[in-house]
Image 1 (cartoon, rainbow, N blue to C red):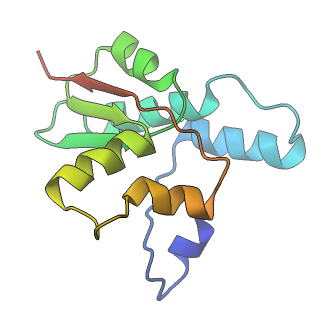
Image 2 (cartoon, rainbow, N blue to C red):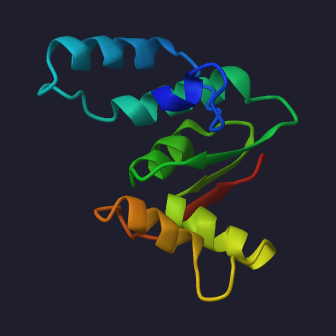
Length: 128
């Protein structure tokens, strides 16, 4: 992610700060072996609650943590939210923008990161 935040990067990434995220980063910096449970998922939901709930915005959350959909569901946020694993997102994109013959977007990810989690999961929540 840091690479995407550098000026002039061709891989732009916007990292939003949350209170939980800042706390998690501080803990991991000082005690890397003491990873708080559900810290990342809690930070995601905190951001959703602050920036998206009650607006007309729809959100796609890419996350490999299978706890995140449950955390989103339990908070009953007033928002249209889709939580997908990276593989589920890429396979959905292939239906809209087919990759070159004989290739898959997911295959390119695995070529770069062979230990990538292959699960396909998705969760959708629509405002009430």
